Length: 146
Image (tube, rainbow, N blue to C red; front, side, top):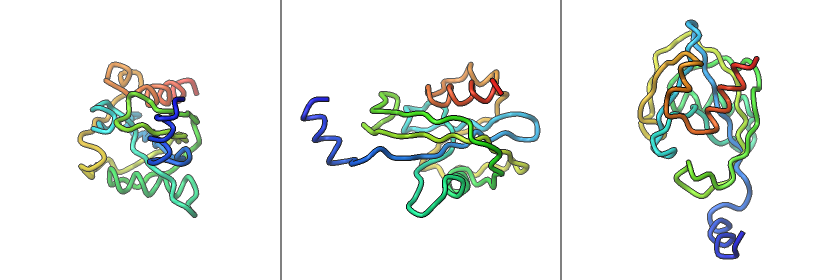
């Protein structure tokens, strides 16, 4: 990494950021995909940063509630991925994604309109026909391998 890039990144981010993502499955077997301007309008998963003192599951429940207004049941851990300055994301960031399978009964999505701009419920296999970010694609693939 060039020294200019190191300086730019170090001013903005000191360490990789641990985040959680929720692959939410409803009673029909469909998954929730949300479109985000931060991912250049690709479909992604609800989720976000783990705050100091929070467990990953607590962060997941909080982020899902904030972003899509749903109360989820965290079922199991699915996948860990690293995103190091991914060109798909609007900022130069180093993330560590911890993605979990979640279930939901209530499907009344209430978007925050800040992080996420649109959503769809889609069958997992059909989701690959949507414009997904590569990390979401990997998480859905992992889910389908179960």
